[in-house]
Image 1: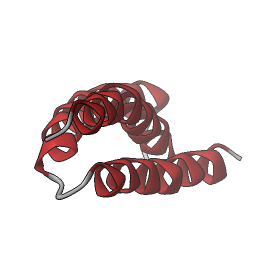
Image 2: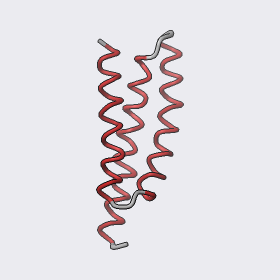
Image 3: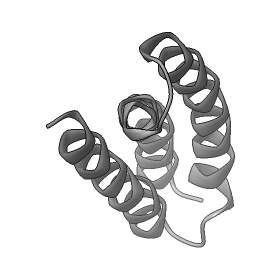
Image 4: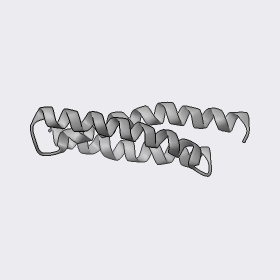
Amino acid sequence: MKALDIASRVGAAVVGGYALATAAALGATALPGTRAEAVQIGIMLGFLAYAAAMIWAFAARSAIRAWAGLIGPAAVLALIGWIGAS
């Protein structure tokens, strides 16, 4: 791996992982139940999503796939959370 590739993967793991974890927590608000339950589930999903994002960023075949594999699901989860909050 080249230094730029590694730097891009680290960026994907940190920034993309944060975006995915935040979107997972936001998407959990669309689940049925009380607001407190949604917050607890969102926090747990956020930790799980961030750990999975760290693994995915370095397991993907290329840095572009790493970014796409994190930003795509983050956008979908954010949309679900946005629609669910309406």
